[in-house]
Image 1 (cartoon, rainbow, N blue to C red):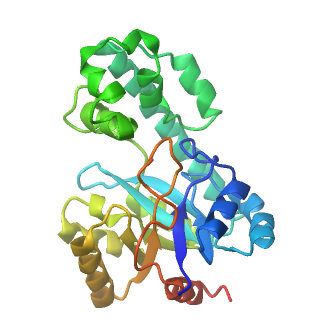
Image 2: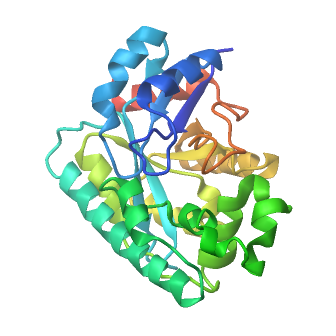
Length: 292
């Protein structure tokens, strides 16, 4: 059976490990027939991917992942856009606006972490980001030698959290209700969906498990999404079953993606490490986009 992974990040995402060409080699080695590189608020990869696709024989779907804020509860909701036109008027300015929001949040998070006693080299964080919104904040805390003796971090260096330390640190210090929490800001989810539509793309709700109440899916569907990432590395069998049935009842397309970043940020997520990622999902997506 031919399989796909329609949610992958390259180095054009500030937390991605690999350049585009390496991703296609990894995809070919994993036996994937097609991938979509969906970088955070960036369409830089779209120019690089076609040559890599031709070299490896792995089909390519132009994509992006747009970071938005859901107005109901202020949560982050990510909207995937497939078969977008990177030259569409308004798309790059919208993505640039989002990156500006995210940079302000990052600066506030660094100040909040310093306020609770962590050492952090802000200049290093901005340098790693390379002009993009920085997500190396947790890494900067955990790799700063001044923090090595901090008892709050013992489990991150040699304990049960060491194998996925960035995830645990974010969850225990930066999420809502945690010591260094900063409210997130970005464009609204409805604006994100509209931006993808205006670029000729198919908007799809990424990893819907992060929508806190399932009844809110109807609100997001009302914004104009055309698909839902039912198959995700964040979803267990019950979740997948629910979202597949929701898509069937509401007429939404179904997509499948791992949210692969590489070994640094999400070491437990493997490219193509999902089940139910049948190539026929891409065929339906392509037909809906009128892309051949």
